[in-house]
Image (cartoon, rainbow, N blue to C red; front, top):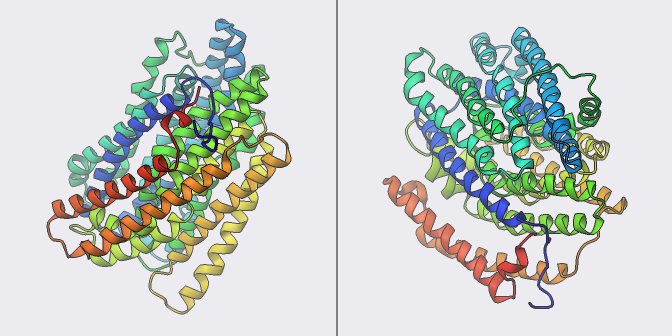
Length: 528
């Protein structure tokens, strides 16, 4: 091995587990692209679609809080600590009481959400208060989508248990099922409603139920299928609750920022909410494929290292996660920035989705892509704290990040709005990206200040390789993009897809070959 080649974590199965999770996530993202393309083609932007996006985003935000965000971050370290003791009965008892407590809390939240749907709509879509029909439609769809939170929260608890036992494939498949269900809802349910996006709202609820039905039986094969017991007084459940409270905010900072952006977008021209939504969906592709995969795999691993008092293994695993996040995040952000127009035109520019919608979505995608490396790093840095059951530090970073996002959104968007600049929503997208950078920087600073991580040898060589690989990728992508020309001028969708895949493949090949040429080897990325 070259002396400068980075030696990344040595924990068993880290890279293999990440690859399994990413493979399933790739299926989900492909299904997601089909779903988004169909949604854009059939329903376009503005009006009822904007109402659906708000009604979908609110329970989706709470899903990150009660499901794979806050709950998982607090639950997994305690679960692994009990698991390390080898007491199966205690583990089953904990899961039973945790499932009962979670179900009870989320049921109450869902009830409040349905009852107070008009007030919640007013909070996140206050720009529509003067549009009674649109406001009422958003409230109606929110009442349909809110119970989705119950199904997805219980599904996430099952997924956390399975992940802790190294069973990553089935939980990673659940988003595929979600997307397939929404596709079916668009094709079969939506035409049966006078306002077609209402069928999408029902599709969201059905998708949540199907995802839970998929994972719940898998717990039985581990002998851990929960019997719901109200467990608020259970000592380990109380520990999770104490850990969870600070994470309610910190683990979902990106979603908080998206909701802030959505609320501001509702004040802009009709369609702004949709343009930001479709840009974010494209950003979610690399984040889900790599960032979420790395973060999901590394959290139980770091938790086990910390529970076993293995400080050296902990820091090596974290180092592995940071390098892998950069290897995936930097080219992903750069690629979306360079290919924002071609990608948006190829995925969305059909049917009801106009050339204006394509252009507006592309400019917000360009701005948002700047933050992708930071978003990915945060997916690794946050679990570094949660694995040690430190939930207050990420919360402190999250509060500062959200304040920064609000300030930046106002600072960027207000001048554009006052000067009637076309595409004022780009200010929201840029603020979201910069806030993500602030969050990652704060987490890194707190991590180093606490002495929780010591960078492993080889970072200088790794950084040089990464830079040279990105330069090679940029040269190839720009040359091919200018040679191909305007993607929107291609009438045949097959031509758009073919050329886009060719450019992406050529850029990825240039990136990978430069990494190999400068000394990086696949064995350097293995985690044990």
